[in-house]
Every structure is written in C-alpha cells, then in structure tokens.
Length: 456
Image (cartoon, rainbow, N blue to C red; front, side, top):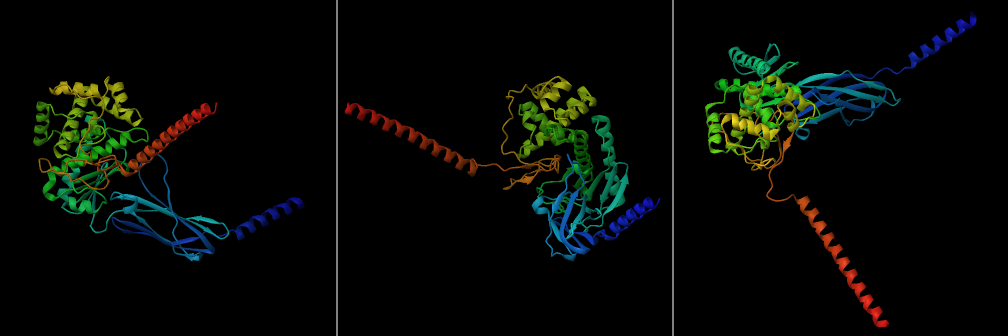
C-alpha cells in the first residue's frame, strides 16, 4: 500500500512539475488586415511571449474551389524579442488580384527560443472596397450586393438572377449547391477600377471557383443587366458541375450555354448568324474550342454560333444528355470522346449534324483547328449588343475574362521568339562545326593514305 501511495505521489509530482514548467502560448493581439483596395492587403499583429520569439510565419489564403489544400506562407522581417510586431503586405499586382467579395483567411505561426510553437486563431476578412456603401439582399441561393440604385432596381436584377437559375435547372440541368454572390457596381468604369488587369471592354466577370459574379450595371442598362446576370451565373453553374483537375470545357460549349440561358439571340446577332449561314462563312466548331477571335465581327459570330450549337444539342437530344456530356468532361474525358459516348458523334460529326439542322452547307475544313487571326481574350459576354462593340489589341498578356478564371493569352508575334531564334542559331553553328570536323578528318585521312603510298 505504501509503495502504491509513493508511486502515486511521484506521478503527481512529475505531472505537476511538467505543468508548472510548460511554456505558455504566445499572445497575439492587434491581429488585423488592412486593405488598399484593389492593390494590397497588409497583415500585422503584436505578438508577446515569456521567451524570446525567434520565428514568425504568416500562413494565409483565400476560400475557393481547389484540387487540394493550398496554404501560402510569408516570412515577415522582425527583430527577435519577447514582443514583436510583424508586418507583411500581399501585393496583388504581383500575384494577380482576387475578385471583389473573396474571403481571405490568415494565421500566425510563432516559435520561441526554447522551440515552443504557437499557432494563432485563424481570422477571416472580405476582400472588398470600403469606398461604396454596400447593401445586401438575400433570396434563396443568391446574395445580391449593390450600392447604387434603389430597392426596386436591386429587386429587378435579383429576380432576373432567380429566373436564370430556374431556367438553367430545367433546360440545361445546371444547379448550384452553394449560394452565389453577385456584386453589382454602378457602371463598368467602377467595376474595372475594382479589378486589376481587366480589359477596358469587360462588362461582367464570373468567378466559378469563388461563387462570385461581378458586373457593372448603370440604371439605364437594366435590360442588358438582366441578360448579363443570367449569362454570368451560367458560367458559375457550369464551373460548379465541371470543376476538376482532369478535364476542361471547350469555349463554344461554355459560352454557348451562357448565351442560351439568356433566351433568344438579339436581332443583330441573329441577322449576323443568318448571313453567315447564307454566305457559308460559319467558323469551324473545332476552332471555337480554345478561344474566340479578336476581330469584332468574328467575336460576335463566335457567341451566336456557339449558342446555335448548344441550342441544337439541348433541343434535339434533351438536357439529360447535356448533363452527361458536362459530367464526362469533368471526369477528364476529351471533347471528342465525350461527344461520341453521349451522342454518337465527335466534334466534326456534331458540326455536320448541326449544319444540316440549320440549313447550312457542309463544312469543307480539315479536322485540325482553324487558324484564327491573332486570337485574344474575349469578354464572357459582349458588353453592348450591336455593331458598336470593339476590341483593342494589347501589347502584354492579360487575364482572360472568360469563366475559366485565371488563364492568360499571349499576344501575337511578327516572328519567332528571340530565345527560339538564338537556340536555332546555336544548333546551326554546332551542325556546321560538326560538318567541318568530318570534312577535315576526311581530308587528313586522304592525305595520310597518299603519303603512305608514296613511301612504298
């Protein structure tokens, strides 16, 4: 009994000793992020500990759909001590800007001289300007944010968004499991000021990975605004259904679904499509798989033609097969194989069937992608219908405004890249040198043979 009591007291003594000598966690106060929207987010805190702090790491990120957990780390400069005040700035011009409304998160990982580590509580903030007095209406799966216009203006656009969701669900089989945030700026100028590296013609932008749509809608653009909201929401829904790290959705399908969700083509677009059918100037469907032309007329025709193809697929074969097609693309199946499995034809077969259905002449192009004059980024929706739409060629790569999110297009070149030219020149020199060595060896060998014969 005495031995048991001694052992108990010894264990209690050891446990008490470990508790007494355990280092307390570092205290994190004034933990905050300050925005200079849309360019920087500056994280700062005051951290104190009983032992000198020797390491501070900022772990941060944003909430979005990803193929795996992504944790970025920053190493702010500071002077070691028992109290430190680390500061670090996220430069959006270097990393690429987040969409307005994105959710940031961050935490601090602190290590003291004794090797004790403390991880602060994770905090969050909404990446949004404080210049505007934002208001919010929530209805079902839509969170509608705006600052200019009365409640009637907001309710009108919110109803358009709800109607768009219903249309996509019943006609295209596209649904959402999570709420979608709509941020409506008073005009396209305000919207472009809120996002870095956006082309001057961008009227709206969808961010499927963030469940966010950003549009600039002036009070006198309600009709265009309703269509644009439905268009961009469709990009988000397509992004939800097809999200994966394996496959991709061809541009004609993504944009075609978005235009189809708006209803009928406007008069200008329909006339242009009819003229292309009559004049046999339709673009090959395979050429519309990766991007649209920068030429205004061809950009318009790309949207109208994509709409017509999607309309043919859905209204001829049903929305169940469209859902099956998108699911196969999500799972990594190529466009040709997915079309073959669902409809029984590849992309050339689809084009042939579609052309026959609309009364167009059979395509005479090859199975290879059709060359387009200087392909460039195009908006997810043509900002204004009609012939006033123009595009400017940009000298540097800029992020696309399509629903795909973060891809970039490179500008055209008048000749091969300098690096390629230098490599080819170097290879030519090496080849010439090699030929010279072989010729020299042959000459020397011939001379040696002649001298050998003379000596005999």
